Image (cartoon, rainbow, N blue to C red; front, side):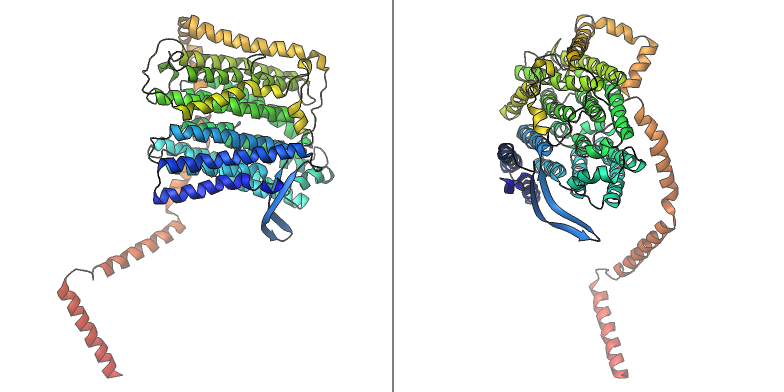
Length: 630
C-alpha cells in the first residue's frame, strides 16, 4: 500500500486539471460536481486504505515513504519529490480528505445556482491538493510549495465573488498578511540549510540536538521565524485580522479554511518541527503566551459580533490559540488532538450556518434570525452537536475531552503555569457564553426572517455525519481518571514526545470540575441575559464605559485601525510619492514613444482606395527609379 501514497494528493490535482479544462470549454453542473466531489472522495478512500495498512503493518521505521522524482540538485542541495507518511501526517490527511470530501458534497448543493460553479470546484480541489502536499512533504522546500499553494487558493476562494469590491479587498488582505509570515518562514529555511546542510525534516530532527545547544541564539531565532510563518497562516496575534474578513467567501470555503486547510498549517508546522522548538525555552514560551493571549482576545471579540460567520471566525482564532498554548507548554499530542476534534465541529458549524444563511435570504445577522428550532430541525440538532462540542459541554461532547487536556497541561506540564491555566479557563468560560448566545439568538425566540427554501439532502447528510464525529470523536482519548484510554496518544507515540508533568495526576479531577463549572456557568449566564432577561442586557449597554468596551471588542481590539495608521497609510503615501520616479518615467517614455509610432502608422490606414493605389504607384516608381540608377 505504500506505493499508493502518491494517489492521495494526485487525485485532487487531477480533479483540478480536469475542472480547469471544463471551465474553459464549458461543462454541465452534474459532471462538475461528479469530478469535483468525486476526486476528493476517492482521495479519502485511498487515505483510509493506506492508513489502515499503515496502522496494521507496524512498520519498523514508523513511516511510509515514496520518492517520485528529483526536483532539483545544485551545490549540495538535493530536493526530491518525496512523500512521507507517519502518524502525525496520517491524522492530518485523514482530516483534510474526509472533511474535505463532506464539504465538497455539501458544496454541490450549496453552490448549485452559482454561475461559476466549475471555477469554484477547481479552486477547492487545488486547495485540498496544496494542503496534502504541505503535510506529506518530507522536506521543508516541498512543504513550502504546499504552504504557498494554500495561500494562493485562499486568495482565489475568499475573493470568489469578486464583483463586490469588499470581497476583493478581503482576498488581498489575506494574501498580503500571510505573506509577512511566509517571508519569515523562508528566512528560517535558509538558516536551517546553512546550519544543517539539509532541508529534509527527518534529518533535521535527528541532527538538531547535535547541531544546536539548548537555548542557543541561533536555534531560538530559527524557531521564532518558523513561528512567525505559523502565526500568519493560523491567524494568531499579531497577524490575525485577515481571518474575520475571509468570511467574504462562500460558506463551504470558510469551512474548508477553518477546519481542514489554511489555518491548521501553522499548528502542523510547529508540531512537525517540535524538535527545534524543544531546544528553545524562549520560543516555546512565546508560542504559549501568544496562544493564551489570542484565545482570550478572540473570544471576547466573538462575544460582541452580530454576523454568525464572524462569530465562528473569531471562535476559530480562539480555538487555534488553545492549540498554540498546548504546543507552547510541550503538550504536542493534546494540540493535535484538539485540532482533529475542532476540525469536525467547526466544519459542521460553518456548513450549518451556511444552510441557515441561504435559507434566510442570505441574512447573516443573528439578531435577524430566531425561531428556527422547529422549522429547521435537522439544522438545529446538527448545529447543537457542533455547539456543545465548541462549548466543551462536560462528559457528552468531544470538545470537552480535547479542551480539558489542554487546560490540564496548561497547569500541569513542565512548561505550564497557573497564569496560563487561568487564561485558558477564562477563555473556556467566554467560549461557552458566545456559543450559547449564538444558539439562542439563531434558534429560539420569534422568527424575524422568513425561510425562503430548505436545504436538500446533499447539504444535510454531510451535517449529520459531522455531527456524529463532533460528539463522539473525543472518546478515543480519555483522561487519567476516566480510564486513561489513550488510543490517540498511542498513535502519535513514535512521532511526538510524551508530555512531561510536574504535578500528581490524582488532582486532575479538580481541574475537570473547574472546567465544567466554567462551561456551565457561561451557558447559564448567556441563558439569563439573552433568553430569560434580555432587557437587563439592554440596560447594561446604556452604560458609557461598557458601551465603549463593547465597541472596542467589536472592532477586534482596534488592530485594523492600528495597522492602517502604522503600515497601510504610510505605505500608500510612499507609493504615491514614488509613482513618478526615474524607472516609471523610463517606462512611461517607452509607452509614449510606442503610442506615437502607432498613431503615425495608423494615419496611413485611411480607408481610401485612391490613397492606397497612389501609394502603390509611388512605391513602384521609386523602386524602378532605384533599379535604373543601379
